[in-house]
Image 1 (cartoon, helix red, strand yellow):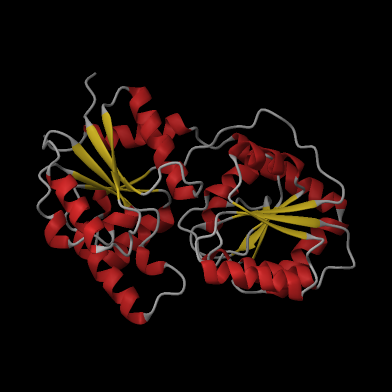
Image 2 (spheres, rainbow, N blue to C red; image 1 turned 135 degrees about the vertical axis):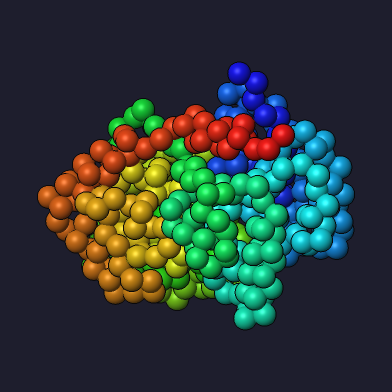
Length: 349
């Protein structure tokens, strides 16, 4: 079978360790492994708030593409590139939308409105849309007017660790997420501040995406006297992250919104009980029995959930078993690429 050639346009460093970048890098690699000729088109790193030069470069690069290639366009660009520029692209367009940009935490009303309108208008130009979850698909249909038959759900794949956990002592509560208000690390720190009577330590792994928020987290750790308990690790190498999962006892993320949340899949493959929030696609991603979901910004409920898992070994063991069982049933990255491959091969000539 002849597979459709494509170009995958991604802003910034494709090796950035965030869920969206990991998804796109592995999707690109696995599409190539299936036999697709996929060109990587690097774009400027200022999207979704592009500089004039990055906007001009993106439009020039995308309009120059061979019309016989399909264009897969990353959501940070897709929701913010000028509509009149995107309309000049000659090849069929596949939008890769992890979650709509207007759903980001901390936007002003004007920013939110601009991103919503831009993404809505740009989505009308897409022949197909790839999303990671039914939740994101539903938002695009009900709020952005995307026809349901144009949307395909390509759930993120997973790499099974092939090793068993070796929990550390004291128990490690692991958090993985960029230092951005949407990830809710401040909520988690407020919960930790009330848990000092128990034995535990925590590592929060994730790059600094918002310097002001990162400083807020550093200040909270100091002010709550958590410096001996909590490590704000920043961006860690993949092998270090692997070791953190292996030695963890609980995975916690007080997120305010997720379009999917690939870190939950990793936690499941390691058999970690999960404490997180009832928001976005999280209820679809974290199976019942594998985690405890509380309301957004509910630091007290986060604390009570963590305390339960730290002090009730039978409940921890049951939740860990449910997590591991769910993790074993998750799709591989080849499975994800096969879904996307079907979309590419089905595009108009």
